[in-house]
Each structure stands twice: as structure tokens, then as C-alpha cells.
Amino acid sequence: MSGLVIDKQKCIGCGLCVAACPASALTLADDVAQVEQAACVLCGMCVDSCPEGAIAIVKESTGDTRDYHGVWVFAEQNQGRPLPVAFELTAKGRQLADELSAPLTVLLAGGPGVAKEAQSLIAAGADRVLVGEDPKLAVNLEENYAVWLDQVVREGKPEILLFGATGFGRSLAPKLAARWQTGLTADCTVLEIHKESGLLYQTRPAFGGNLMATIYTPSHRPQMATVRPGVMPYPVLDESRRGEILSQPFPQDFQALVRLLQQRRIQAETIADAELIVAVGRGIGNAKNVALARQLAEKLGAALGCTRPLVDTGWCEYKHQVGQTGCAVAPKVYLALGISGAIQHLAGIAGAQTVIAVNSDPEAPIFAQAQYKIVGDCLDVLKALLAQV
Image (cartoon, rainbow, N blue to C red; front, top):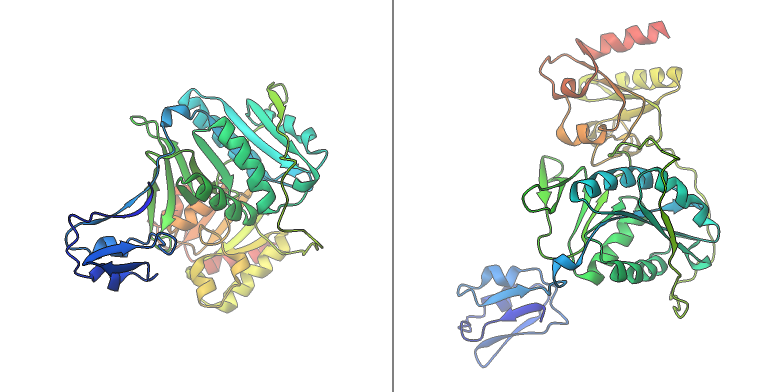
């Protein structure tokens, strides 16, 4: 039985748990605490408040974890074409699968015709691609995708399941984790197999990006994580690779509660796909100097990026923010002006091919990730570059 469990032998009827419960799910009857499971939100505040240790949260196990095998990746698509993050996760999944000596399966779902993209995912590293091709999957509705994925995953029992941390992935993954009563780590920057236990160690920024937390799921399956686009390297496609492409039909008896009436495309400015980025940090000095960096970006045909403090002070808009609390990027060239290199910012530019860093502090962390390093005033360098272009 899962849920909140009260040991009636230990309970002394003090009522502290009743007072601590924010959901009003606990009451006292005959001097013993009682719980209404339907109202309980499993926050654990009553567990902390009980002086006798009479309350515990019990979760059902998914069964023998040895029944689960293989690494699976959900390949999100748009208008029938897999997103870049689908290929990034396929490459990472290939690495994890090789370490576990396990197969890599990619899940590709969409409207009629999506199956023609399956071979490109095999070229990226998949051993097999399970394809769901149905009009109900032509648009990204969480309810429809959850039904298809629930059926496929319950049958296949993967050990690891990865999603892209897109808007759709962030909405779909927790819906499935709740169905399967398993853990989910969001916005991971590092995924690695622990050598002794074989568990997936999932690292992500925590406490506003001030430290990195490593999380693992020891007794529930699948082990689930979402990864931001641009964090993992894009693979080199090998068109000579061969693998299985299998059809997984959508349940025909499913009746959706949500029906899409209209869809409109909104063009939004993004730096995620920029090949050249001019980025500024606090070392730029003031808002006027940010305007100079914007000029340089325009002259170079580059996107303007910034660190979180510049957004907090109002010098830049959030759409320009690079890092784990902003946008993860993977440009060919990343010019960092006055950026010291906080850990969450470095994680956001991990996919950059070439980093050019300018900072007055020779010990700035950004230099550890840069191929070209200039120790000096970033404003002087900025003005010199403007003069050159």
C-alpha cells in the first residue's frame, strides 16, 4: 500500500501532525491520528512534526528492477521532423547504452508520414526506432502522447527514459512519471552511469544555480530525466548504420478529452540556434555599454546574449539570457565579454565549439572553458572590435 501510513502503536495522539498538515488531511479520532488519503498531498510536513516517528510515506515499488532493460529516448518532432534535441539525446543515449551493454531505443511519434524520419535517428545511434503514426499524434497534445507512451513503455520496460526539456517535454514527462510512480529529474546538464551501482546519475543546477545536485532513482523504473536543448553535443550522423524500425499503433479505443480547434504559429526571437553569439556579463559596466555590444552583434550578424545579473538589473531582456536559468546554446563561436563564468552559465554554453573570453580577472572560471583568452578590460576590446568591423 502506498501513501501516508500511521503506526497506531506509536501514535500518542499529540495532534502536532494535525496542526502541521497544510491540506487538512489529518484528524484525531480516539486519540489516534487518522489520514484521508484522497486529501493528502504527501508533503511530509506531518512526518517531520511527529515526535514519536509514527508517520511515514510509503511508495509502491515498480517491481523487480531487473525486469527493466535498455535505454530509451523520446524524439520530439515538429511538423514531422525530429527536433535537434532528439538527435542530441540519441547521441547521449548511445553512450549510456554502450556503458550498460544495452540496446538504445528511440520513440518517434507523429502524424502520417513521420516514419520516414526514423532512419535519421538510427544514423544518430539508435538500435531501433518505435514509430507511432496516427492523426491523433499530428499535434503535440500531452493527453494523446501520454496514452501512446504509457502503452509502449509498460510493454517494453526500459531502464532509462530521456526527454528533451522543451515546453512539450517538460509537460509530458511529469505526467508519465506520475503514472508510473517513478522519479524524474528536470533540466539535467550531466548524465552518467555510476560504475558500482549501474544507476543513472542525473546532475542539475539547484538553489538558483548556486550548486549542482546529483540525483538518482534506486528502486523505481524507468529512471527518467529531461535535458535542455543544446546541452549535449549534436552527433555526427552515420548513414551506413542499420537498425530496426517497428510500428507501435495508437490505441484505437481512446477518446480524447481535449480537441484542438486552431493552431497559430508565433515567430519568437531565440538565441538557441544562433551560430555566433556576442554575450555580455556584469563586467560590461552599464546599460550604455550593452548597447555597444548589441551594435557589434548586429555588425557581425550575431545574436546578443547575456548573463542572469543583466536581466535582473533590466539591462537585457530574458530572451537574451544564456545559462541553465535561461537558454542553453551551442554556437560555432561564443564571444564572452565581461563574463566571469558562474557554473550555471558554463553549463549553458557547454555545447559551444569555440569560446573567446575577455575578462580582467586572470582567474575567471570562464577561461577554463575558453579556447581564446584575453585578460583585459572587456570594454576596450569591445570598442576595438567595433572599430575593426
